[in-house]
Length: 220
Image (cartoon, rainbow, N blue to C red; front, side, top):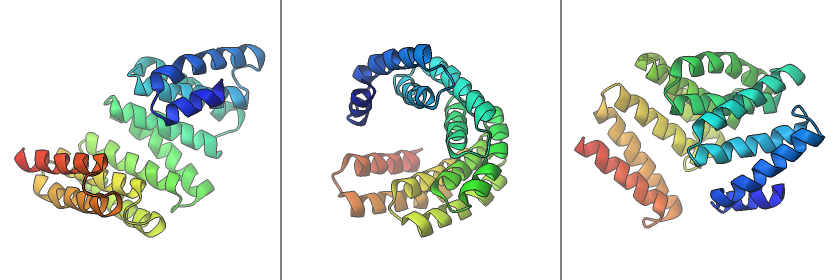
């Protein structure tokens, strides 16, 4: 059932995946216990489903529980603990809980740098989250000082058209828009559009979405 749920999720069939994951999670908790690695893995998938279904409070509670368990059982210097912390921080940012997200990221990213390295995609993704958190807290200069080298590292390690790199550019554009500098955001959005058109084609849904973002920014 867990594998079928993952398949459904990968196909975007989230409403079909969720009840399967809920049943598997409940069974694993009963048989293996909440702290078993397999139970935690299913909980991660279930929280992702709930997030996509806009069941944010349930997803947040499950993420907090999973992170607390991992910190207690395997410690903060563990890749799955780091990934769990970054997922929770991302959710906190999406629900405008930027102060707590910033605190969580400040203690997580040094662990990611120590364990995984400064150029690891997970570390760089966390750095992008950190930049957004600073931006949301009103510190645009600090946000820029983080996102600019982060995007450069993403381009060097993953390539200029990799989805994570383009997300970093989008985060930089968001930081500029939040700071009220749409003139600085426009070329960043244009770069995203150009790279998506080259890598995926001008008629791809993601290219069209990027084009719409450019138009909305220019019209604002």
